[in-house]
Image (cartoon, rainbow, N blue to C red; front, side, top):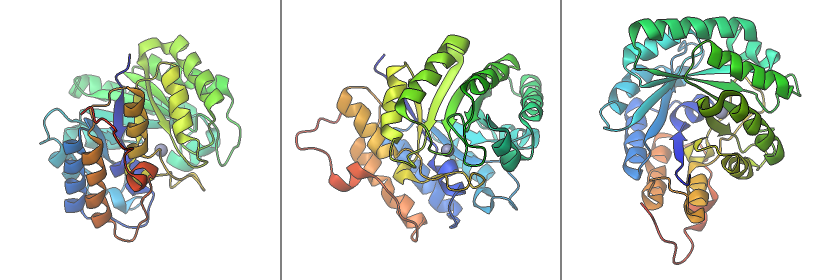
Length: 305
Ligand code: ZN
């Protein structure tokens, strides 16, 4: 019960949302440092047209490098069949597909309605089943807690969408607070319903810190039995197609919270803090965040990993 998986999404969610383009060699050095700290699942990029997101143009090369790190689950995002084919061809272990619960965000993000996205996900599942059955597919329900374009996203629609995604064959479906609108009571309510509806196919909590509630929301999800959390080193992140969205939960602060509570992450905090250096070297003009790396570990704090 007290084991949690921290999935680092910074190389994708973080780097896609900033203006700077991190050089490929720097990305690889940063991923190496994250791996050294004990991270065992990393979303290393996304397979999208380089014209739309030039920051992600080198994803296949980054995947190839990440595959040399033994025991690491290498993930990449793909918004459509074409992206998923490229991801599978590159050798990823897991493809993650964002599916918006908000019709308005779905259109802005992928130029498809929710119904069209379900059809697209079904095509991706069919392709995977025929060509690479070992690859896992995760569909994250984006804007599950509210949308910067549409506003309120009805909870019934969020849960119905997650159920539909499982029904077309994805391995897991989690909930994403793409816009940083969630609060802990809402997180508890939605994850409780998700667990009731899809059981152990409930996937990760992907929570942003835009309004300072990221850690509180992660704790709320943990208390509802969630054991897999997305986070981004230095709090980088956002969605380029959800105006005003920013800032994933800071990996360093999240790992500290869980370790301090006695939950096991397998991550060494000092090595994790050290991994900020290659990140900063690769992105010299960007500000990176994190309370615990700046304040330091409490006196007498016992590292478990
Ligand atoms: Zn995100």
